[in-house]
Amino acid sequence: MHLGPKPRKERLSARIRVAMVCALVSLLSGCMGEGMSPAMGLFDSKPATAAQSVTMFVASTRSDDRRIGDAVGDGGLHHAMVTVSVPPNHQPGLIETPTFGKANPNSHFTLAGVRAMTTERFTNEIGSHISGRVGADRDILLYVHGFNTSLDEARMRLAQITVDARFGGVPVLFTWPSESGMLSYVSAKERATASRDALQGLVHDLAAIPGVGRVHVLAHSMGSWLAMEALRENAIAGHPDLDGKLGDVMLAAPDIDLGVFRQQMARLGSSTRVSIFVSRGDRALSLSSRIAGDRPRVGGMDPKNAQDAADLRNLGVRVYDLSGFSNGFIGHGAYADAPDVIRSIGAQLAEPRKEDSTSVAVIDARGAGPEGQATGGAEAAPPPPPQPLPPMEDGPTPPGGLR
Image 1 (cartoon, helix red, strand yellow):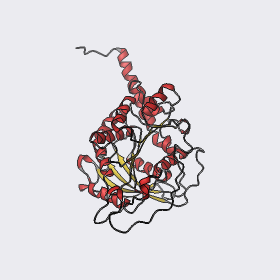
Image 2: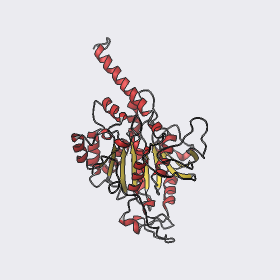
Image 3: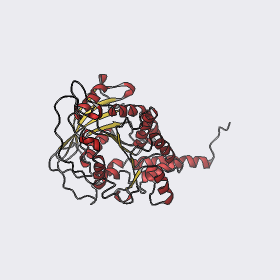
Image 4: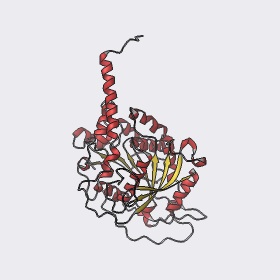
């Protein structure tokens, strides 16, 4: 056994790899910063003139934000209901935060309230929020953030997405321990893996809530891998479409190996409605690919490259090229920074479904019947005719979108 110093070439290779990981951590350390700068001329929209309140439900595997008592469930998963205040004159594509000092509700996103709850209370409370709603407003949007995202950043991002996309359903955040630090990108996958079963159980529980319409999934970066793994586990358990409740699966800048993604898609099946948002200028994914031995990341593929275009078509997913929408140096957060894109996501979620014309979520002493149709209580009045924005496939789309 050789116990002497490593050869100079091997030492240099190790140093280069460490430098690459540090550079990736540095790049991703600016991901949230990109979302906090103004989008430049991409969307002409008048900001809201009154403050808006976003109520979301948070399921967390973090150890630094646990509540006391029985709010911590099995496997370390704990739950809360959170209210975020969005300031008047909020600009789409921005998360307004103070440069220094305390946030002002009149100018900044602020945390207005947090209430911890048990697992049972968590799902019951979501069911209560769904009750009485009609159509797409019965839907849930489950957001899974990526690497280097604090709890506070994740909550603010989901509030921004909810408001900018004009999502009328119930937003749910799944947050996992993903803060950055020296060499933490390497261990982040392990922390994501440790959270996989908790997310799989959450997805299953959300789909089983009486009266729920569809459970949509929006995941970013490494969170896309985590979300796809959770869906894959549900598929292996015999619920590939969550018993008819799985809606759109939208993966923004997915930090997923192409070969792994093929296997995940094979488990989910061709009926799963998956969209991926790619950008050839995503520097974070480019460096992630280098660290992984030059293996391509799905979110960094180039639809204008013949081989990449063929690989993307063979995946059976809808692909949208956001290369022209990235206004930051890193290019890793265009899905939420560009108002045109986030509005298109909202339009996709609001696409009318045939069954929604008769489905009403009503919870009473006798519960809700199949497909959320009321089994008792007062009959809800039909909603006004929906006026969604043009869906992404039918209306204006990001440049280079593949179908």
